Image 1 (cartoon, rainbow, N blue to C red):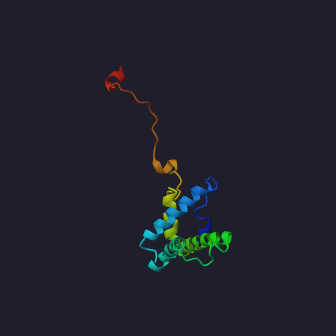
Image 2 (image 1 turned 120 degrees about the vertical axis):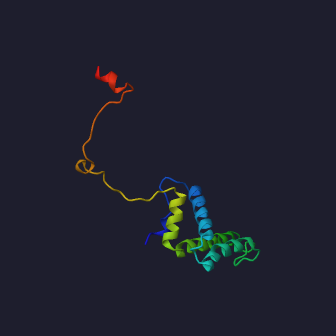
Image 3 (image 1 turned 60 degrees about the vertical axis):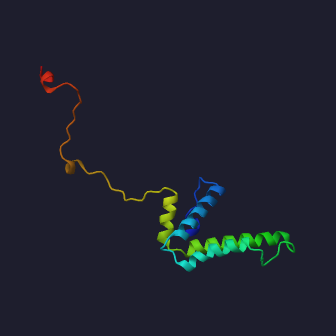
Amino acid sequence: MANKHNIINNQNSGFFQDLVLRIKLILRLIGDRRVNFLLKLLPIAAAIYVISPVDLIPGAVFPVIGALDDAVVIWLGTTLFVTLCPDDVVQEHTNSLQKVVTGTWRDAPQQDEVGEIIDTEASDEPEEEQAK
C-alpha cells in the first residue's frame, strides 16, 4: 500500500504548489464515481463547518485557538478523505495531476533478433547516375 500522506509531496515543489495540488486531488476524488458517496461528505462537511457561524471553540473567547480549530477541521476532513479513498484511484489522479506516464521498461532487442543491419548514405540522385 502506498503511503497516501506523502503521495503528492515533491522535493522540488513549494508549500503553495503542494496545497493547490492537494485541492485539485480532492476535487477530482469528489467527482470520481469510484469513491463512496458517504466518503465524499468528509471534505464537504469540513468546508461547511468553516463557513458556518457555529464554532466548537469560539474565536471571541479564545482568539488563537478559535482560528486553529477551523484549520484542524479542514486538515482532518481532507486528510481522512484522501486516506480512506481507494489507493488505486488516488494514485491514478495523482499521476494525472503530476503528468506521470506509467509504463514498463523493456530492453532493446539484440542484434540477432532484429536481423542484418545495412549502413548506407542517403542521396537524391537516381540510381542510374550513381552507377556512372
